[in-house]
Image 1 (cartoon, helix red, strand yellow):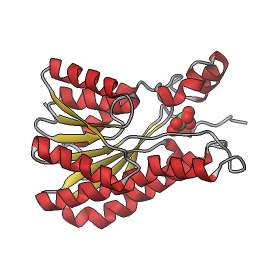
Image 2 (tube, protein in one colour; image 1 turned 90 degrees about the horizontal axis):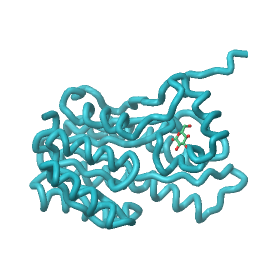
Image 3 (spheres, helix red, strand yellow; image 1 turned 120 degrees about the vertical axis):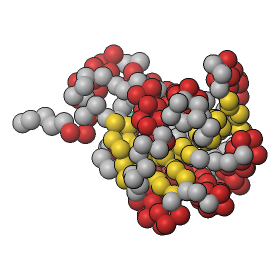
Image 4 (cartoon, helix red, strand yellow; image 1 turned 90 degrees about the vertical axis):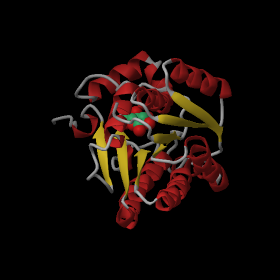
Length: 255
Ligand code: BGC
């Protein structure tokens, strides 16, 4: 198994891409720490699914917008499984507002969920990795929009652009400790974040047409790359981004 005995924390782990990361990592032998703030019943169901398949998982009710809660989250991993090997900053949201529409409250909320959370979770994980003395890995579930404008979703793009620099600058700062930071940039994925598009046949047709592979990604297809990156078979990668987008960012109208 690729992740035997490794302890992995996944923020926003009880739905969407996060849930599939938990399942895929558990299937490869990892101990899973599922961070959540809502739907404890979904966390319980996921833990049961992992345990029924012979895996190990624990839930932690931690508000990722609070640095103190992020420290509790890291500590839960250490208290439960003895150490931390991989942090996956997965939790995220979007609000589909333009620059002219965004409010201060909406901006603060989005930046706290997407950006501040990843920043301070990485800080706490890095301190734990340094205390353990044998390196560590942070994987950020970013987006193609860390580098590709999405008009009408600007705060989301700004937050993901920040995540891009978190991986690059943080990766450089922490390299000497053997700590690596790698971003994963999905394109359109069939998860709750895209329900407004996937439940509207016209919009879905338009989105599929813009993707060279002709369809959204399944969350499992993102989780598989997380397993690979966490497996030790990608040990020279840091301060960079892996794109998984079906080619969407390479398209052109060709006119
Ligand atoms: C966004 C989606 C969007 C996709 C492709 C994702 O990061 O969350 O709303 O459809 O990128 O543009």
